Length: 457
Image (cartoon, rainbow, N blue to C red; front, side):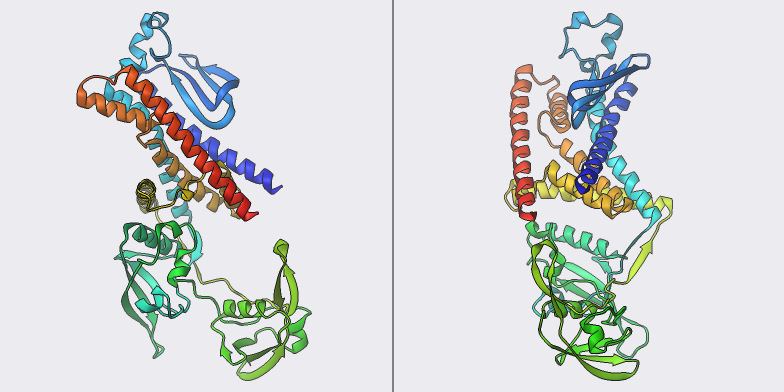
């Protein structure tokens, strides 16, 4: 069933993005007066089609679901004598270079516009996200050495306000790529118990490599979310109930070592299978000590042996829902789309010069996996995934590689500079080279996908 959900989520995402991309080409072509012969979702042999409109444009579904195309009246694909004289002025190559640029660029631009719309919708709707209040960092981490402490709430990074944890991660990711340090503004609990103290620290990001951005690079820096105290919830039949623990007991220490929060308590129990633990706790205002021995159980398919005492412990961080008015949401959506595009280009540049591993190139298998995961989480996560993939599709199509939109735009830029179109011979050679490069990238992506799949398995 999970595989079916993944496939459906993938093809819905891919189909939507392809349709939006090709609609960009189609609408601007029609606006420029170019005759459109076919609009196809999918590549290869047509398996279904219908004709509509004054031009009887063929709307088709093709056998290979990866991609799509808009076929225009083009003298490079059929002899001029076969084109009716009334249609000659609507032939693609007879349009001005600026019109051809507009038609070709419209596809990627449509993907960027879709991302802006999706982000704006999410910002208006509001999404519950963790508030950026910090957990205690280990002393050897960059966060601790910068002066960040438990309970600090991050309010701004390099002068840009942040409200939720995802914004903290995003801004720090950008700074890692720029090889810049982060100036972090925080609100700190007042030891005197009234109000907040304001502080600014400088977090050094030099210890993070660009290749680590896909993982939990924040944890390496020592940044993690504050968790609730270790207050016990529902007590089930098992070691905790047998030992006399009750709902509402707050665990303060284990074997004399202070417990930072509920997560630390759960982690200690999990690593103590079959080992007696002396728990120091507070019930109401009364301190007590309880000795408990966690059961040994096997965790999931991995077979890892962990400890359990059969008690619920709340671990969810503090959450907040931030929603914006339409104008602010659109502005934020445009800014997020721009920032993501710039970051994607920087990552590609770093791959070219060898600063970022080619392992970061992903293909359809990984994209399908992410589509399935986000769809199972919920509509908000899925739409956010669609926005990011739409941006990636737009950026990739603008790369100056022949056979992609960016390659055609490069030809037209040369035409503007030289005053004449590139020669057919040059175009043929460039197309073959571009196709070869594209195939090589697809093979690298497929290899990376298979390695990820085997590693996860």
